[in-house]
Length: 414
Image 1: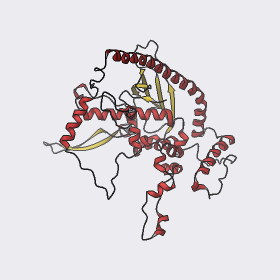
Image 2 (image 1 turned 180 degrees about the vertical axis):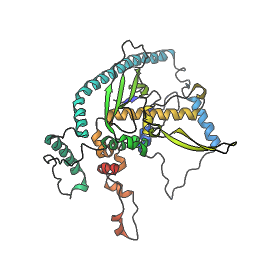
Image 3 (image 1 turned 135 degrees about the vertical axis):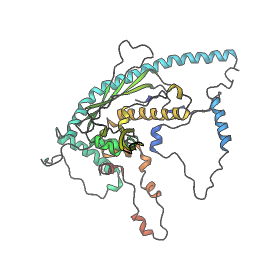
Image 4 (image 1 turned 60 degrees about the vertical axis):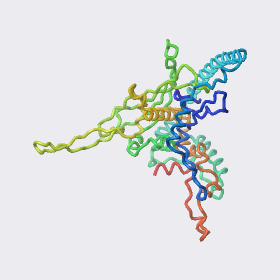
């Protein structure tokens, strides 16, 4: 289910034909699209770059356009009273439509909750296999291999390879690794947005991540109109480690009791559980900065250590906070807050709708191929990325090629 952000998550859904209001529209792209593809076009060698307008003039025009946002051009007001009455009647119909949209979204949310109960045994079985508590059955392995054969048939590069040996009935050696090591770390790193958030220091702790669970929340009894309603909670389960004292870290998202302009539920806010680090040195959201100071009178030196905030995946459990009232006029700070908030909601939604249900596809890298087809392209597209060597055509075959999506597992685990 697609969800709308209260800050306008899917802003490019607002694109439309010119209206009588002639109101400028916001064309900014969602954060996920910005992370997945370049946003700056290239200029050919023989093309001339367009002349840049005067910066002051550009700023003046932009300020003028911004001042027009939400202001009427006078078109509606100029209509005859009979026509304006009909417009108001259409607005009344739209009110009834919005009520049905809200009911529709509540029904979808209830349906998601019911199916979450049916998914639960599958997710529990997955957890047991990942941790090594049980081995998959021959039927489960054969079903997975059937999917691989279909994928191989669609991949021309695999045509000449020998058929794979079935793993369904092999005996498991007692010396074999237990379960599937680093399953969730690999799956998270194969997600475009999350891979940008995970640092090398984070990986040491995320190796102990044993499960990510989804739990839907019920609307609080006696909730007042307009109060934050039901939502969902993400639970990150960790094995004992040197970093976290918490066994489970949670991130909870709440919806508003309303639907957005596009008819989707609107996020209200998010809450993260506090993290209990076993020591300041193991706090991955801060780094220890060491500084020496000299006493001017005694000439003695002392070493001071302090914690400095740093980038980390674990900042995900501290949702972005709105700027203070005194900083409302700081457009740059407000814009940064909105971008962080948008990314926070998008990551939470991707974890709920994509990563948790299809974790094995992110682990193997298969999800990268299906979610980013433009990134891989076909064989002809790959050839276009390389220039032919006119002096030696034989060297073309030796050019390196981008790794295929199915190689994602090996790439991330090296």
